[in-house]
Image 1 (tube, rainbow, N blue to C red):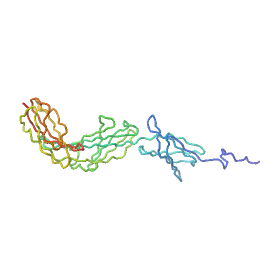
Image 2: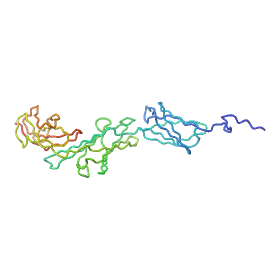
Image 3: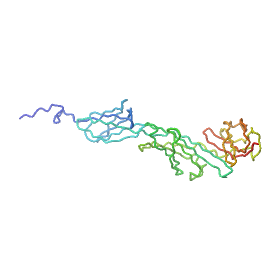
Image 4: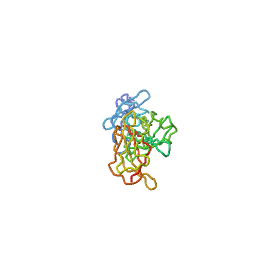
Length: 311
């Protein structure tokens, strides 16, 4: 009996039967509304070769004439976490995939400000480091879960806290928080990175403190609980910083318990200005004032307090 002809392309016994498979699919963001992701690099690694393509504007990709069997599909996009999955390519069929990529959280900007505050009591000067980091995430700022802040050389590692504005994280650290002398912090490498709700971490953002103002400005008058009129003139010595600074006068009133209450501040004053007169009359009371110098980065050094009286 003669065998039936094997010229049907759908007959698995035919030499014309196409045994290759196909892979097709769509890649979107991880969360609703699942926006399609364009230009994602899609790599399929098989036993003997690799196949490459990129997604189109609708987030779609396709491979044809793929050898049946097991392979590894890898999806890579700059702002997203790389994802690997095993894919089974069936003989003579297409496999359809729906892949969701997690956005990679990142540090957008970092602002570091140092404050050097001098006191009569306690005698030791106080140093403060204020950190503010603005973060972003392709899945939205609420997907950011935490921001890690490190000074590797000092083995300092902590998490910033959320700020008042969404996407902003902050931290305030004092000299007692560190295991080294605070003035030595200038020039040390500082790094930050953020993690998201899925547990993925972004790249490290590396920076350093621009400046720490070690010297302290000096007050001339009024001082020593001197009695002045209600519109006093405040005078101070020239601060030789070696870089451009601005001055600011801050005035505090002392109540019956000697607890200071902020009264007013001067506007920012040019570094050629060595005196300033308050424009608002001060009520009879005991006061103290300080003079601050601030550089263009916002770093500050504050003088010791000088007391005076208005009768």
